[in-house]
Image 1: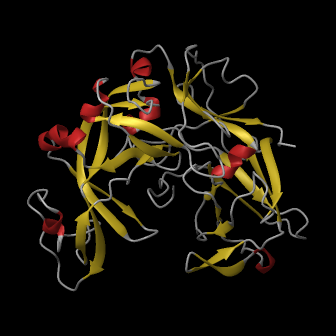
Image 2: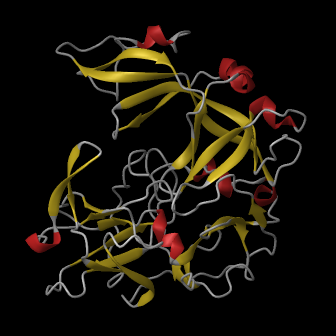
Image 3: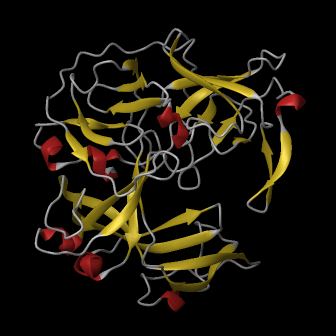
Length: 394
């Protein structure tokens, strides 16, 4: 979800000029199906019931439902009694900021056990993570600009009012205000990669079986299902695109880089297209195209409309759009097309323009409707993105 994390600044050549790294890798055979709470996917978000902290001891019936977000990495949940002992033991402050609504959520990073795919009574779970770092968010705050640098906090406040007037976003000109207790239903489970965050914070890649090397890290997201772990059998029929390994950063170790895709506009009378990193993002229901200039986006492919109260540049309704995932030689390995606004299962709610960027690569966020056209796999063990076309419903 782009409102969570920004794209990594690590450069990536487009697939037409990239050189794939040969992979010699053997996958384990074990996988596990993750039960979903939500049913009407991918039109609506993928939701999973989880337990964290003391709730994950196998004896508690406490649980919460989190949205699965392949567009971010890391778990964020409200501070609760189940996290209290881990909160008291932590001295690491943290926050998440949503640019979409301007809300800032401060808290602490805590290390806790986690159970995934939990039954409603809390007695059964599909998978377990023995220990993972999550953000326990304490409050919800607004952000305001000021003229004088604010005084930093010496420690995490005991109450939300204690955050008021403290620095926001590591800025000397912005402060927090109107902080209040966070809503109990707040939370997200980010499971993406190439997001500039340590993969150790990704619950889908750190199951107990994966840590014990009995399951290969990765996952498969289909229109109505999520599979944890990847195997040769599970990936049968997938077009696998080798991924490049990115450089380590100050905040995260080396990670696999996203695959490349191109969006083109058949029947538009233009050969204009957007190529760049592809993010199949279960956290949003619309598509985002972030091109590199030059060339400029043709005027016929954009118009400004009001979406959620904001002026937004979009691709006009009825425009034919095709999205193709390409391999290292620029050859399509998976693709699908739609007419913007036609309401079909694989058609995003809207196609929005971002940027443009002055340096490559461009970025394409497909949104979750891509999953109505094909299953999506991430093989973190051997470094592949996989796509498997599915037949449309009659």
